[in-house]
Length: 61
Image 1 (cartoon, one colour):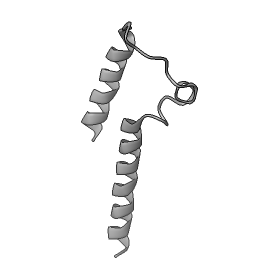
Image 2 (cartoon, rainbow, N blue to C red; image 1 turned 135 degrees about the vertical axis):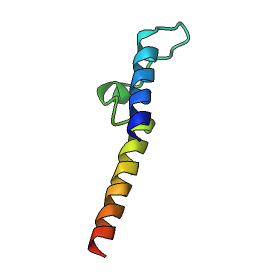
Image 3 (tube, rainbow, N blue to C red; image 1 turned 60 degrees about the horizontal axis):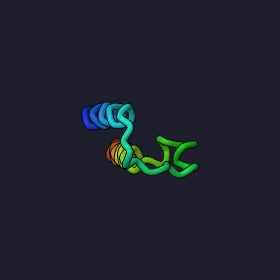
Image 4 (spheres, rainbow, N blue to C red; image 1 turned 180 degrees about the vertical axis):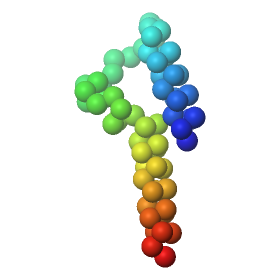
């Protein structure tokens, strides 16, 4: 998961640096919270949370 996160961050940085004439305007809420409303980051956060809950569950059983 960590390698996937690093690749995602690098890819986002490369794409963010290149401006295209085909880019559409970004919604105002996403501009204010670019990480929280990004589905890729939400997937990582949910997956890490699920793994931690499972580890805690196994620790107590």
